[in-house]
Amino acid sequence: MFLVLDGTMRMEFRDRALNVERGQFIVVPRGVEHRPVAERECAIMLFEPASTVNTGTAGGARTVAKPQWL
Image (cartoon, rainbow, N blue to C red; front, side):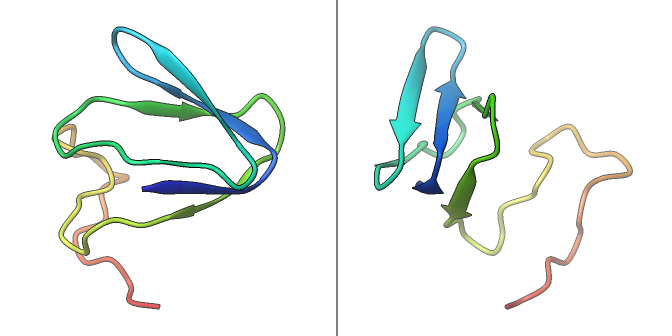
């Protein structure tokens, strides 16, 4: 779930794009390819299971194996 705290973002999917504005949120189902985009600075709060890998199935040097708990 992406909650927009300030600004505006666009969530792009393979077949469409949705604008999400301040105070709105979007839930992206597990396994759905998506790309969050912001033309200007945007503050969001991201809610996801601790087991979610930050790079999906791509892997690589940016993958975080054990995310830090806050």
